[in-house]
Amino acid sequence: MNIHGNTAFAQRIATYSREADMAGIRSPDFEKDVAETGEMGPGARPHGAAAIADIFARHDTTSISPREIDTMAEELRDAGFDDFDFLLGLETYGEKFQSHLVEAIQSAGIEARHPDYTQPMDLISVNRDQLAHARRAGAPTEWREAFLARLEAFQAAAHPAPTGLSTAESLVLARAT
Image (tube, rainbow, N blue to C red; front, side, top):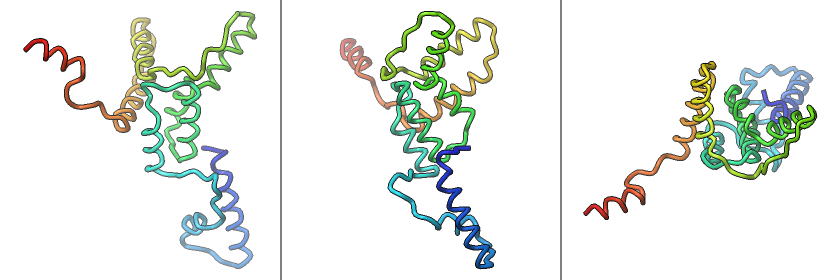
């Protein structure tokens, strides 16, 4: 549950309930009535499947920084994305979580520096490497496999692979003829 994004909605519910109760109204379409009460300010973010698809389209997980990951996770939460397992996994690569790890290492007396949290990484490749490492170590892989599958599915839907020959393939074929 997104406690930050639901504050305005909760306030609308409370206002609606209080006003309806005072007027003796019991609406058969409570959810619709609540959604229409209260002002949606300029800071309100889009909500629903289209908003979620737009967020995935704006963030390429093959080139994303920890700072962008935090932004993406927050936007997804605010848009109503409810795959919390995926969100929590995603956030472990974000700046907030990574900086917390560095600070925990430093507080243990181990010298560590904060990396550049604006440096993009290929999150899919990182997860493939971590999955391969877990398999070699004989560690459980179910969660990592599921996370990687969802990450790849979201990436493929938002950023489909180009069709046709790549530049390198075109050059090789041109030299062969």
